[in-house]
Length: 245
Ligand SMILES: C[C@@]1(CC(=O)O)C2=NC(=C\c3[nH]c(c(CCC(=O)O)c3CC(=O)O)Cc3[nH]c(c(CC(=O)O)c3CCC(=O)O)/C=C3\N/C(=C\2)[C@@H](CCC(=O)O)[C@]3(C)CC(=O)O)/[C@H]1CCC(=O)O
Ligand SMILES: NC(=O)c1ccc[n+]([C@@H]2O[C@H](COP(=O)([O-])OP(=O)(O)OC[C@H]3O[C@@H](n4cnc5c(N)ncnc54)[C@H](O)[C@@H]3O)[C@@H](O)[C@H]2O)c1
Image 1 (cartoon, rainbow, N blue to C red):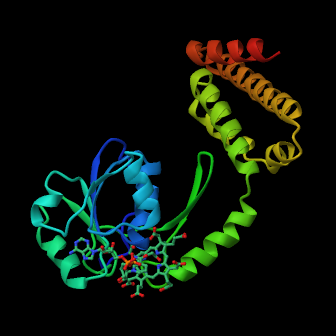
Image 2: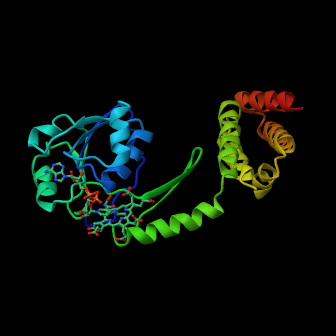
């Protein structure tokens, strides 16, 4: 991988992922795979403590053996995480054409590399140095984690529910964009931080009714101007005003 790469969040729920090697690095990768709901198989004659525990609890399938090419058959993603570079290359050579691999000591051959990530509910912040310095990525993440603290989980949930409501009830594209922008006013974060959820909702309601009012005026102005109006927009905006007042 020599280009900067294409950052994505993969939905790997229920998908089979095979990890070769059972040491500290494998345990770190498997922890994140389990959080994402993947079906994980670990192939290794030895397991780090976390992996042992997950195998005992049935959270992962453990093949207590050295790697063989057949072990990765059917896997969607493959992670080669042994401490033997020759074994990691053997895993790479055994890939089926559609499989994607992360080789923990060969970013240059990997189809994907893993950034550091921390989560605050639905917000996730990831940092990568394209393999240049994973330690620096971790340090930057720690700095960001202080700034984007636990309050963001509730704040992002609030933004999500407002957004859902706006998408459902406000049909005018420009109006929506204005509302989404207004929702990012720092006051909503501040009220979340201060635990003033009611004041936050009241402000949001005011924002909606003001926007609905101005859209109604706009529709009426247009109607007066060219004798024509968009009845769907007018109705949606008026409905909005009635709901909110
Ligand atoms: C982010 C994180 C995610 C994760 O693994 O889950 C991750 N490495 C983490 C930590 C970490 N890794 C290393 C140290 C020791 C300090 C140092 O060396 O800097 C620390 C720090 C620590 O452990 O504290 C050593 C290391 N890492 C790689 C090599 C091989 C090489 O470079 O060739 C070596 C040398 C091995 C040797 O000694 O030979 C390779 C990779 N490591 C990556 C990811 C990918 C690029 C990420 C990026 O874009 O920056 C990439 C390319 C491939 C991949 O693994 O996907 C995770 C942070 C988890 C967290 O947040 O807690
Ligand atoms: N990508 C990263 O973030 C990162 C970080 C540190 C180190 N590394 C690299 O990752 C490698 C692994 O690090 P670690 O700390 O997990 O090592 P480790 O020694 O803790 O674990 C190695 C594991 O590989 C298994 N293994 C060895 N040969 C095998 C085979 N033929 N088949 C199946 N399993 C086999 C061992 O049983 C053991 O479980 C290091 O050698 C280093 O090159 C990568």
